[in-house]
Image (cartoon, rainbow, N blue to C red; front, side, top):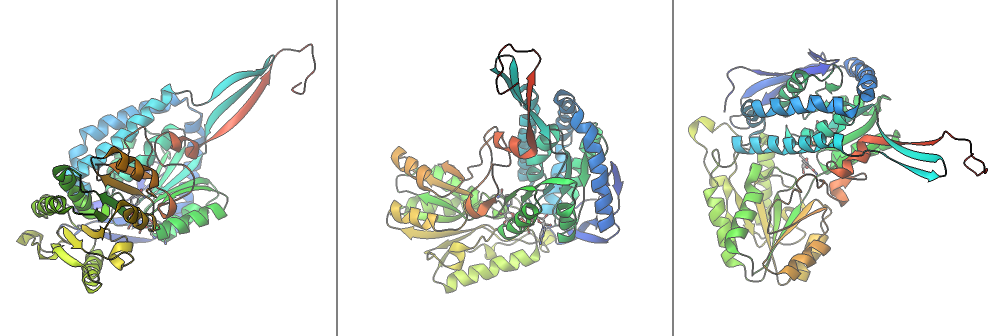
Length: 488
Ligand code: NAD
C-alpha cells in the first residue's frame, strides 16, 4: 500500500487550493510507517480570510432553492462512485484500513448523501391557517457558515455524515480534517468542485488545536460539529457554547456486548469477532468489553476461531500511529498484571517483511478481566476485547451501566425477552440485537448519549436537520377582517 508519489493536502480557501503558510506536516502510512504525503497548516490570518470568503459564498448559496442545490449533490454522488477505488486507496494509505473497509466507509457516506438528496422532496417547513384569514408558516433556513472537525478513524465516512446534509440545507461548510489523515479531504474537495459546488461553499482548513480555535472563535461560524475523543469533544463543546454557538460534539466510547448462553455460536462468533477486529478496533462502534453471562464457552471458542482467521495485513488493517501501538502493548501488559488471562495475544502476529515497519497488532482477547480495571474502563481503540465473566444478566447490565460512555451496546441471544430487557436497560444511544456493530442505517440517525455525546440531537438523519438550520416563523394576513381579534 504505497502511493507512487507523495500526496498533498493543501487548504481549500475561496474555491482555490492554497498552501498553508504556518507549517508543513508529514503524513505517515500505518501500513509501512513511511511518509506518504504532507498537509500544510494555515496561519491565523489565512483561517480568518477563508471564513470571510465562506461567509460571502453562504449568502448566494443559501438563497438558492433546495432543488438547485441538490443538483450539485447528485453529481457529487456520481463522482464518488466513479472514483471510489482511487479514494479508497488514499483512505487505506493514510489510515491503515483494508481496501474493503475503506470502500464500505465511503459507501456509508454515500448513504447519508442519498438521504440528503431526498430532502428536496420533504416539506421542510409547513403552513396552516391559524385563525380566519391568518396563516402561520415555518421556513427552515440555513445558518450561514457551519464548521465540522473530524477524527482520523474514518477520513471519508465521518465527514460525509455532515457534508451532504449541511451543504444541501444551504450552509457554507468549513471542514477541519484530522491532521493524521488529511489526504482524503483533497479528493472529496476535488469531487465537490467537479460537481459544480460554487467557490467558498466548501472550505478545507488543515491543522490542529490552533486551526480549530481559529474556526470556533470566528464570529462568522454559527455551528460547530465535532467527532473525536471525549476529552476534546467536551473542550470544543464548552468553548463553542460559551461563545453562544450551537455545538454537537460526539466523543469516545467503550461498547459492551452481553453474550447469553442461548446465543447462536456462529452468529455470535462472527458478529463479536468482526466488531472488535474491524478497522483494527479503531471504530467508535467497536466491541470493547464482552460480558459473558454463564456458560458461553462454545460461543467464545467461535469468537477465537474467527479472530485467528483475521490475519493482519490482509484481513485486518493497521494501528494509526506508533504511539498508539505502544499504548496498546502497555494496556495488554497492564491487564495481565491486573489479573486477566491472554486467550489470544495479537502481539505475536507477524507482518510480512515489506510491511514490518507498519504498526501492526493482531486480534487480542483478554479473559477474566475484572470490572473497574484499566482494560475494563478505558477506551483502548485497538483490536482488543476484554471478557468479563458474569453470573447473570442483572450483573452484566450493572457493569454496562457503570461505564461513563454511552455510544453502543449489543446483546447476543435467541430470547426475545432478554433482547428487550437489554434494549431497555443498556445505557447506550445505539443498541444491537445479534449485531456487533449496531450502526443505524439512514434515515435512522447516528449518535450516542452520556460521555459519548455533548449537545442535543443526532449528527445524521432526521434529527440533524434542526442542528444545521433554524426555523423562521412567518405570520401573514391579506384580508381586512370584520371582527377585531388579537392578531389584527
Ligand atoms: P481526537 O479527539 O484526538 O481528534 C479529533 C479532532 O480534534 C481532530 O481533527 C484533531 O485535530 C482535533 N483536535 C485534537 N486536539 C484538539 C484540541 N486540543 N482542540 C481542538 N481540536 C483538537 O480524536 P481522534 O484520535 O482523531 O479519533 C479517535 C476518537 O474519536 C476515539 O475516541 C473515537 O471513539 C472517537 N470517535 C467517535 C465517534 C462517534 O461517533 N462518537 C466516531 C468516530 C470516532
